[in-house]
Image (tube, rainbow, N blue to C red; front, top):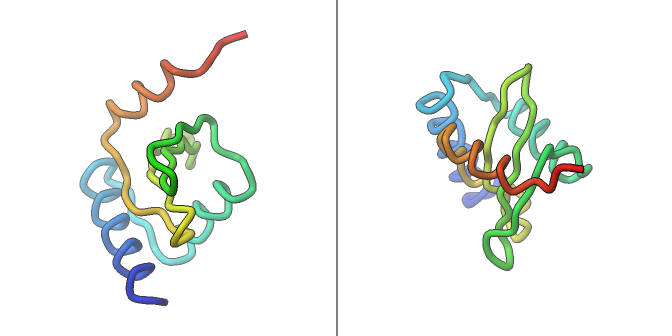
Amino acid sequence: MKNKFLSDFLHTKLRAKERYNLDIDKYNYSYLIRLIQEGKSIAKKKQTNTRTRHLLNVAGRLLHVVYSSETKSIVTVLPKNKAVDLLSTIPWK
């Protein structure tokens, strides 16, 4: 792993454990990235030119992450209340 990618992985792993009591290893991390890259997010919202917030369904849980298109990595996992904020922006039909 490259230094920035490794740093992003370690930070994401720490925040997932802290905020969701979820253990993420390198295989789970790669899987989450693949979900985002394949457009399988429940919701997404642009944060900056290179970062997007994504809501993912992981084992029946909603996981709110920030993805960097520059490094092609998840840079953090946001608290649960932020997931509710993102869900409220979805246009319901």
